Image (cartoon, rainbow over all chains, first blue to last red; front, side):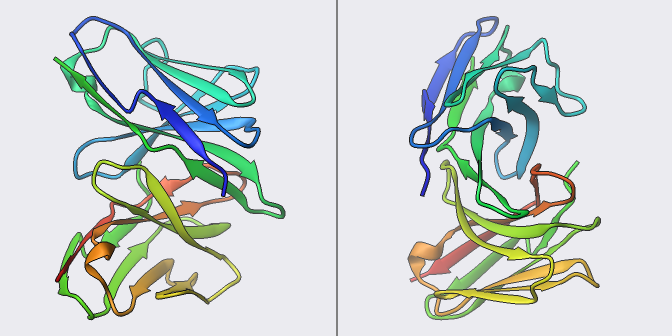
Length: 118
Length: 111
């Protein structure tokens, strides 16, 4: 199957700094990528939909100025957490969409990035 | 907000037993998918069932879908310790590709 990578896998930063997380589709082109956040022992919450060459669509309650998304190419989307605070500590997971035909569009998930803000 | 609700939230069984997890959702869907997540890892796609299907099998996995009750179940037969993980259902309501995840079931299979 298609492979999606994330970098870094783990990051620890000081409060107030910005952190960039990369999501890459390694062997396919993804016009659409998704960013999710997952707190411990909870489900995945969709943060935003990232479309190549256009602005991201953010879910209600997600601050677009805090979580900057750039989808500059068909294989790379980045999420930048600006001025990170301890409450931003979470597991961030991206997925990339590939069209499998018909009405089904399969998403392939990255391995996730664990962000810890001190 | 999360559309799917899963029960049980946690399930602990012995190796060799079957594990059944349920998922309910609220709106109409294109398809429903089940994912597995090992602790601290990404998601692994297990199986997809389309809205016009009622049952699907894949190895030791059996998924059912009842669109009239807006519910699905995942059955893992002859469980193994390696099946220990969190299992999530995700729905894909029309018109597009946004997945909405259930709350998940934490399955522990004791050797």
